[in-house]
Length: 426
Ligand code: ACO
Image (cartoon, rainbow, N blue to C red; front, side, top):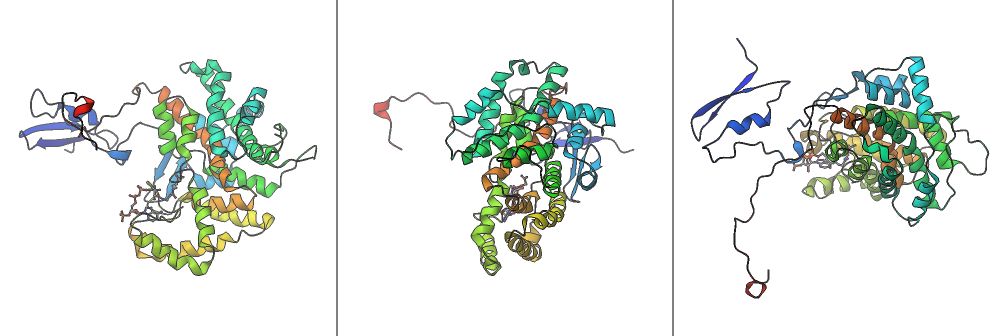
């Protein structure tokens, strides 16, 4: 009769143990009973970068990296990208089910009517130099919001929690657009409550002298789909940061900033520009392969997907719709050729390196007129939904505690203090 247990023999002692298996996991805390003697601390798991450690149970997003599957609350990303809207998906992610009409109308009203920021936020943002990276303006401004809403610290109160989540989803596009306008020295544009979530963002970014901004419907829809694709991605680096810090979207934004995560689309664009023409691709691929990990093909590879990132497939399709409006971004030809060569090359095939979401998103953002510095900001807007839903799941999970990993200490053994006159220079 098969049992959901794991039998372990400690060959140091000959002792045998039986560990429970639940949901395909053992609890690493169960390893602590495995000791060589009374003084022994007990066995731990060593797993740098959490390659094979689940940090939580979650019901939000499912990924099968080998098959290239991504689902929010059970719904395939391809169907959501085709049939849904970002706000509907945000509701789904937060609440577990798609909204009925009345629920959706209420949710939309709530989000739409929290888009304004306190005037002091504008003044705060004015303090940044014109060339400050918008992602760092976003992180700092989001951190400053806590001072404007001190009740947000009541994290155990479900109603207060929900109010802050709505506020954050509503205000992220405003702060993101203000950070962009600030970098150009242009006046901030207040939210327009008549427009959609994506349309209002485009208005705050683009509007000049006109009294009413009408977003191009194709670009508005493309941005909305990009927001859907980026809304959540289970326990990625920035979401894990948000869960570990335990209360901070600013932590998520900051973790998202770097080139191996949300800054990858910025890095892809810089890489494509550096390559410059199709004829230079073979030399670049050679550099990647012979560089011993120094030069990476940005936008390729993923910690979880060892198959084509399903989001990249959807993005590739919307690129054409955007180019119909904006004209073709010439970098797309370099990207397509790079992908074609890389997918046939043994180096990439062997390592299961496929294009990820960032390989094409930057090309679309650029065609839409966004500078590269704005790309991670455009990622942070929709990911706020994922960060906060994951954070709320953590807060309401009775098994969770303040995060505190163990370490394997390999440093100096205990020794006596040496006075300065007796120390040797290093
Ligand atoms: N180009 C070239 N080689 C790569 C790349 C790449 N983009 N990614 C991984 N490799 C190589 C590694 O050098 C390694 O080679 P080795 O076995 O000879 O040492 C092998 O493939 C395995 O890579 P790992 O480092 O184990 O992969 P890991 O899971 O740690 O990294 C990551 C995943 C960080 C995404 C990586 O693929 C990468 O840096 N990609 C480029 C940056 C990028 O596009 N990031 C966006 C990710 S999606 C997102 O955050 C939204």
